[in-house]
Length: 300
Image: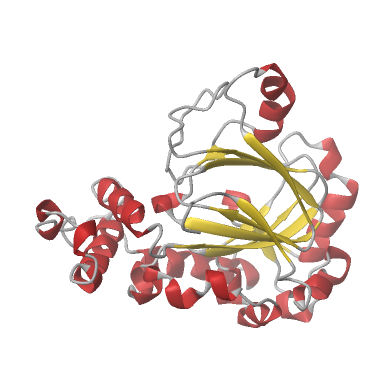
């Protein structure tokens, strides 16, 4: 991790229960998730068997494909976390964010389900966090640019380090833009099932699903990405609400003595926006879970 170079890790998923349990044909009948999953940013809860039918019989007809990108899955279904094991070199014990109060911690782990030809456009992960993504089924095509890349060729909108998923369509970029790039080509690789992709802090990435896929992914901030995470948290504090600034404050108070070189005098005088402006991460998460439970109960 120290050089900050993306790579594919093999041999760490073979004993995962998820490799058997999360294959969609079996996963759709798993009693642990009988309440269902929600689709993308719509927060529309549907039974997993309905989503499985969509992937198999309908997704190929839709230009805008349904993806399950579910950060609250382990809050709603805690037992799913027992189906996989984080490798020691990505240990959560080394994640500085684990020391932050739970109500201030950004979303950090997801289960992702996606049909063939879907994907995510070019972006950098929130707060410059580092990421790994473990692929249970299918294959993914990855494109990557280093943090020094200011703008992605052929991309209309620049979503550098923004939590905004209305980005340029990934599949169209790979079909219509990539073949005409004779310079500034991205690093490329294909990730297969049972492989784990490592994305260092600050790296641009875009993904296209070459098959129907199921994956689990986690974002974290360790000593190799801590400085860049702090910088981004502070820059976002004025625009992203109270909890971003409070997260920076807590990390500073916890680690400024141990990592003095990562903080300057201005950082020590920084104060988050006034209490009451915006909502905390905990409030946002609670509201989202409350809405999902109302949907499950038939209120909507």
